[in-house]
Image 1 (cartoon, rainbow, N blue to C red):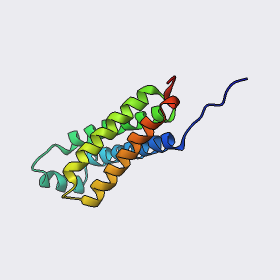
Image 2 (cartoon, helix red, strand yellow; image 1 turned 90 degrees about the horizontal axis):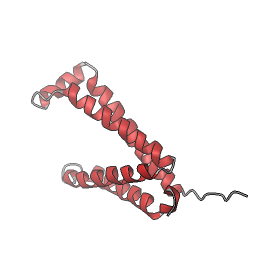
Image 3 (cartoon, rainbow, N blue to C red; image 1 turned 30 degrees about the vertical axis):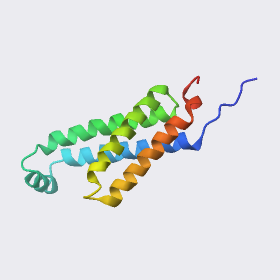
Image 4 (cartoon, rainbow, N blue to C red; image 1 turned 180 degrees about the vertical axis):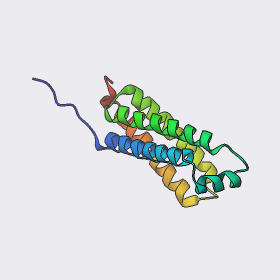
Length: 129
């Protein structure tokens, strides 16, 4: 008789948050790659930064985040490590935004800490502990 494997809602929560962030970055990247009036205006505001290259960067990051979300959902140890790295980077970078957009920064920091908790509190879900 096969034992039933425990699956916490916290790890599923971490996978969903990672997936939402990945999809958001994919859509942001596609929007930046698309040639329209809004991206041309943004290009002027950002002092000539190549918005298309910026878009490809965020598209690739978004795809990697979405793959990480899938790996977390599948309870892969690689997904756990990648998720911890993404969440730590995101939490660290949100500190720099706290005086510009304090509510956004605190929400991002809180979600990042929740993801870190989810990925570290249930190590048995990611293979043999």
